[in-house]
Amino acid sequence: MEPWRAKLDERDSVAAWDLFIEHYRRLIFATIKQLVRDHDDILDVFARVCEALRVDDLAYRLRGGRKAKRPTSSVGLFSSRAAFSALGL
Picture 1: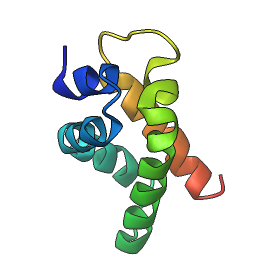
Picture 2 (picture 1 turned 30 degrees about the vertical axis):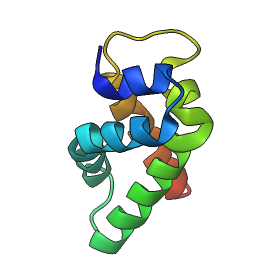
Picture 3 (picture 1 turned 135 degrees about the vertical axis):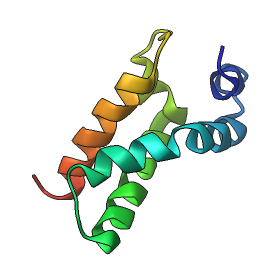
Picture 4 (picture 1 turned 45 degrees about the vertical axis):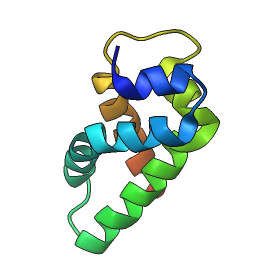
């Protein structure tokens, strides 16, 4: 089990978030950079994606109410959707 998920299971959302963002920051930025070119817009979309991911202690967005073995593709897909949403697309 990934450390961030263990912290989430322990209901320590602050530590879970810190570990999660440390682990997936590059993936989230890479996903956003495929859709957005302007540096300031990239940072703005990243902030919006992070804000959306924090909703419900990451559980709703990443788990869908069940345990997932590999969240990476979910994170990438959610990042793409959140980036489109942040851009008003």
